[in-house]
Length: 227
Image 1 (cartoon, rainbow, N blue to C red):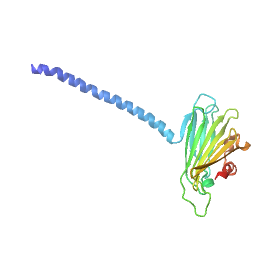
Image 2: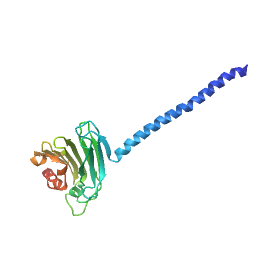
Image 3: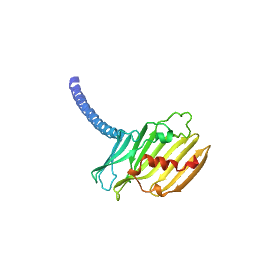
């Protein structure tokens, strides 16, 4: 009698054991697929590349930050536009000597918004002060905003922001290359000084205008009075 009672129980236990491994394999497979998908996208992001809409069609364009054999332009943003089937390049200029009086390594990051605006962020490594050198600007961060001008069929620079520390002052500058407006501010001892203005030379800036002479001879001097 006891043997007849135990037989159904053993059958149920065996069925339960057989079903568990199958469930475990399914979960493991699903987790593996999700991990592979995340890793692929994350690797592309870390490598400095992404797909996003930038030109005037509905297809994704291919963005990549590539190394360049130039001390002044060590990296370039390369954009392959689907509408033109053509690459456009934007130089990511190393401004460490201009602002810090010594060359420093720089990191670059970028995003593309739903409004098709590409924002590039450039950060520089902190430098030690150089003896007998004045005017050093530390903790330099630059932010460049780009869009594709469909009428001109060129990459247009529509905005530029930078921030840095000079001695005990914290300085920020912002440029609107559509309107030609600029504003600069410095903060010292909880007091802020600002200056703003407009200039025709700050309008209609395209990738070919974004070079070291433009940054050195024009942008560098705007807002100097608040430093």
